[in-house]
Length: 358
Image 1 (cartoon, helix red, strand yellow):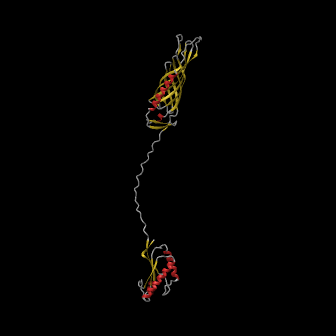
Image 2: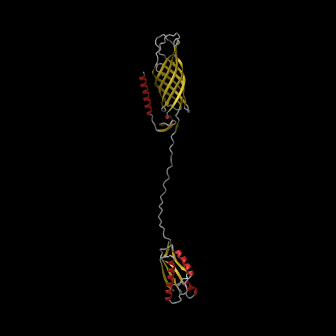
Image 3: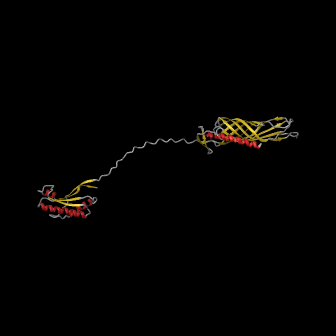
């Protein structure tokens, strides 16, 4: 008997496992118990597995196995107290459940009473599903039905009882209504082989079938079009050049001499400071005289005066200087007046290329 029980139990387990593997899937749900499940239905929690417990009471119709014809059954109907169950929802259609039932006792006219206890494991198939609302289900499984002589004959005679303690096939059907809070009410008819039938009303509480819906995909806005590439022309800075032609109207020499006065040295000192940032520029110092005296004398005097200015500026760190005397050949005013002659006695500084570039 034990081998038959184990064989039937193994067969039932294989059937349930195959049914679970054949469940189609497309979406992911993370259940309260941390198990990730796939579901083809938008009601994702339907595939969240979880345990449940329940209990109830009812009535049973008992059919004792007795030997001989002297015993007469008085009542084969008794109360089922309690009917306990522990189950596990595999998915929205399949569950596996263990039951313990105390089916009460059958009594005989002789005063004898036989007690019935059942423990079994069953697979349940729900249709359309075991979710919220009403659903039906079918049950099939195996278990052990135990009988015992609770009370002997009133006349102390021998009661011939065929003691049961073996594997029994269990078949049943029922309906269940489930509320939002995972409580449900169940009514069920159950047949345990040919030895007993029962009708029970049960209350069931499920655990762990809540779920966290998968996050909705975040739709990012399309990236903005790339900004047009603006080619910035490379501008090579040009040197800043200034026209350089300075007239030193405050450069004075002693009369008929190339010797600079003290006031002139102060002016030339400022000129030297201004020219030091341009050490590579070639500069020309030009000296001019009025028309008094001979042309030859005035030309020589202007050469000496230009050289005197160059020598001083060179001593102050100004480089690339040349001296040129023009005598009275380039007057800028009338030599017939004292004012005009004063303007003609002048010293000029100019870049040889015409411009002074930074």
